[in-house]
Image 1 (cartoon, rainbow, N blue to C red):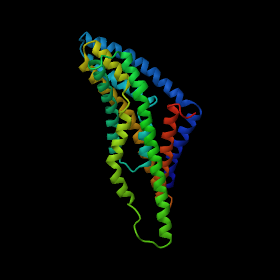
Image 2: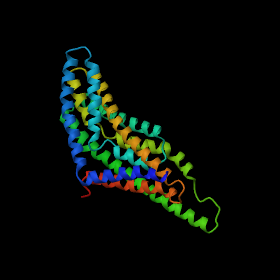
Image 3: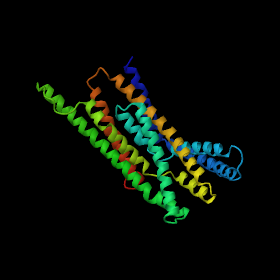
Length: 292
């Protein structure tokens, strides 16, 4: 019965691989982009209603911003792959991964708020200068940071595999001494550090939609409401990240339960960490144009 649970993660991986090979991920991105355009029109209408002080305009703006954030997160970026890869390869509880997803998304909104406020009030930048800074400076830096985190995860997974192989060899020759921390000790030691690294890497990229909203709301003299809308966008982004986190945790736990009585169980998470980290690094290099 337990072994049959392995079907779910296998189908998940096979389905994702098939979708990428068939180009259906591009179709999903196009669908998300169309949804973003529709919500941009709705956003413009909500801002006009807000300026006209129509009843319920603030609530309508918040709702539109939340939906925009969700659709915007379907596209490239926003750390979904990083959240999913980490959830697959680590025994992190869903509650903690949810908090990481939420804080990462809020961090992107805060990055946008700091960038816009600094640009408008300290540097006297235009909207195009703010957008160029976000897309040409902060986006590459965030992509590089996520790629480095992926490489770090891959290296850590390789080291764990090597340590397990070494310990098994010592056990085979009758050695009973401890040659390193237990997996539970490693998990406790790296929990907070890993969370901070993930949040910082994802939050380094400000949300472009939030930048647009903040600039428009500043010109319309409703900046405070624009900040509220930017935070609502981040919650929409967080909703998708939490969905990815949930899927990754279910897939991980069902895989471990399937292999609970086998000698290969101890190798599963380090191997996933190695593969997921390598995939994150490769995708980041490709986005940066450093890998064909």
